[in-house]
Length: 162
Image (tube, rainbow, N blue to C red; front, side, top):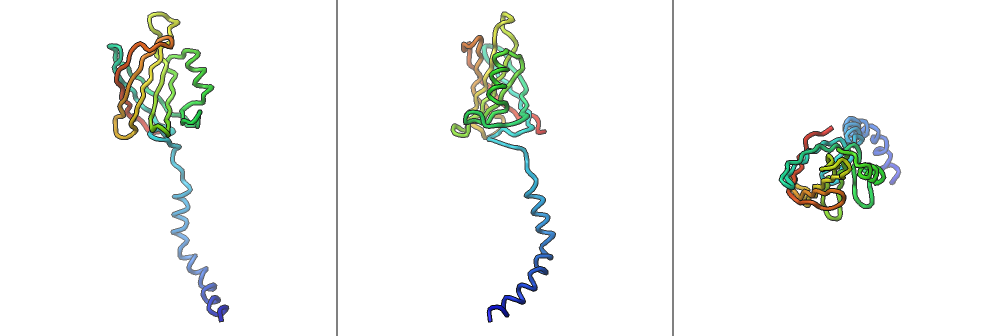
């Protein structure tokens, strides 16, 4: 008895599936497309403009997000080795963006132009506690040779999406 009831349903199943094919293919292509890798406000392909005032000076830089990877529990735009090398070599313009999911905070760090002497190592850090809204606002720290010189304010604006 059960076989007779299932047989017509089984024979009609290919017809039902065929009528759903356009919907299935539409959903499959939508599901198959992946957007850029994103953690918090940071996404691969973005360009951020950072600006702020610290120690009586206006500071502006642009930071690109070429890739995001897990680095010591945070998601960063460069690996820890690249970050160490870039900052250790004092490469002006070298920048790192990171997102800490536990604290829900974003940080942008970059090497600035040398201070009063060419061997001065100048680093700016824009620490953003909130990751909602635009622009993101936070604290800008200015360091010279590893010592904090001054704190100010900064804001981060998404200026481009690759």
